[in-house]
Length: 148
Image (cartoon, rainbow, N blue to C red; front, side):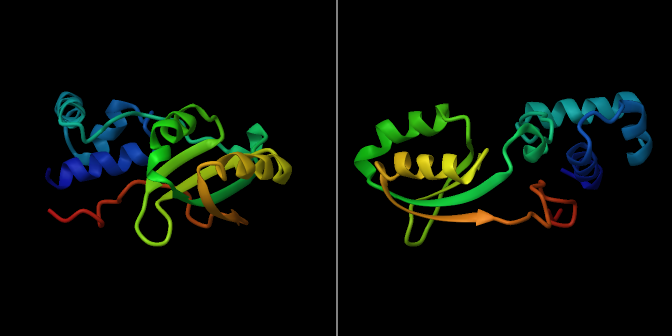
């Protein structure tokens, strides 16, 4: 990984649909050289996928919350398929501290969130925070975050 690779990653995080020619101009390479670098980053597993950023409010999911869960380890065989198949769970991370998992969820109403909390409490003790806003939406690491 060099500075050009990091710049390519940064540009793709801003807009994964940037035309190859425009991306090549931004990193001062030819289009074939840029395409070869992208392909190498994909083969190395550095670029794992391309995704659209969606405004959850505009698709009817205005309530974003973070749910901390203290999962009983015996529940893992049931819990992991549950979270994998639940459409309102955006992300789940195993964490340190007083809880074992942190879930990011989105719902159409606080009532729907409350119903979900009732379901998830079957797996262990929870604590929930509702997000009022996101002054910095999710992004990947910028070129300044990764040192060469």
